[in-house]
Amino acid sequence: MSATWDTASPDGTRFVSYAETLLDVLGEHPDRPVVITADHMPVSAAELRETTIRLARSLAVRGIGPGSTVALLTGNSAEALAARHAATLAGARLVYLYDMLPPDSLAHIVHSVEPRLLLVDSVRHADMERLLSLVPASAVATLGPGPRGRDLADIIAESSRQAPEPLFMGAGPEDDWCIRHTSGTTGVPKAIQVTHGQYRSCLTNLRVDAGDPPRFLACTPLSHVAGLCADLTLLQGGAVVMQHAFEPGAVLSAIERERITHTWLLPPLLNRLLDHPALPTTDVSCVERITYGGSPAAPARLRQAEEVFGPVLHSWYGQSETLGLTEVSPEEHRVVGRHGQITVGRPMAGVELTIRDERGEPVPAGTQGEIVARSPGMMSGYWKQPELTAEVMRDGWVRTGDVGYLDESGYLFLVDRCNDMIKVAGGGIYPSEVEAVLLTHPAVAQCAVFSVPDQDATEHVHAAVVPARDHDITHDEIHAFVTARKGDQYAPTVVHLLADIPHTSVGKPDRRRLRALLS
Image 1: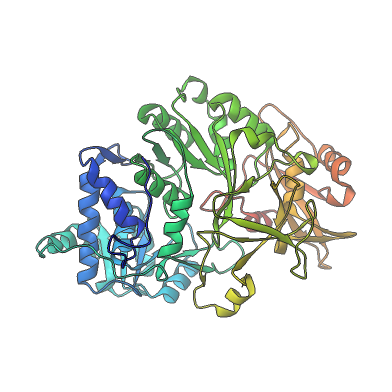
Image 2: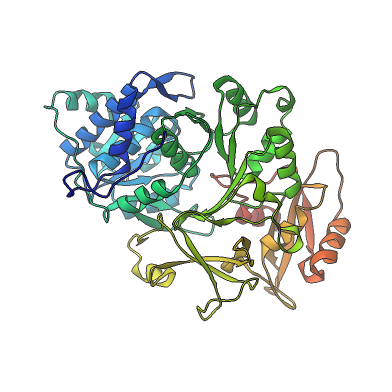
């Protein structure tokens, strides 16, 4: 089953949010389980629907609606999912306070968005203590019993005494649905505004076929791509299985036990799944789709995943500023560009892409330049940063800051971020160019390339490498391998052999942390 939206109700006057459509879907089969919690407890469609409605009404009673901000300090729970949808029903602006952000970044976000209500679940009580000096106690509520603030159960009890009223959200398509923040790995997180209309359009244009009904495993934060996948799954009449965090053994157990049809993983997490000793004895025949993206993937590892799971791999490329831009289907993983790099696909429905030079002019196919895009889920701008908005958004297009090229068939290939260029003798190089070459070496399981300046401010290429199981590799081998394929200026000056590579909270290689640890 799939859901579609109209821009107005039958009388032609009212905007309809994705959350209102979701309530209709949940009401069709009220007894079916739609959420399986991390503690293996089922939540029925009726339970999720009622909790969402009562919380939305409670928000409205507190005066929270269009123009108000609801901040979620939450993990992967049914309550957090209900709060996400309830804020949308109320027409409020939703902000996630991400796990693993440093205290100063969390403080910056709270100061900036000025939440009318902070909702906290049991996983994030420690983070709540750090924010109490910034948020009035009266503005804090907990999703379940907690050491501070009012329990959500009390709020719902209050709303249950209110006379039932139709849930017509006051927000329009141009009102803020969410402010998403970047990971902050390059400094203070940027705040990205997305409207109710933009997110609804994104869900309308994005189709994920993964079972009838689908069963999605949320083993990465709902505050990121997993939340979008959860929304799509529920709108298609499926079920979301929760895990608090990614742990490969628990993921494999859940796949077999819950007959998972779909999950979202970053390549480093997929690699950990492939390396887990329980994989050969786990029944993964139920998996119909694994969506991955967010960082480079080794072609050899993708072939290994195909051998284990079958032709189920789909790659997504996009940004917080644009949401999804391109997709690679299983059969398109054979489309490769320079140096054996796998394509990141062709545009999704409703997406337009172009490659432009430094003057903003389009370039011919095969020519490298900045990727410029417009998409159904693109941002409306940066929160309280009009200058940055004007710099990034021009004439309705988003300058992604990513470097890439399109081939004659319209397939996109990534090179790197514009501002990640390493300046070396002979020109500039991009870390992902070197990573793409390293990942073709059979002895390299994972890698991350970064620059380290010396005392004269000259940048040098460093590579952190995790050897593949039962393989040894040396600095000289890596240097010769990259030199033969890209030239000496691309070859790492220093190679760090590691057991693992640190990652950000969403699973991307943390280059800033590597630089601090290894330079």
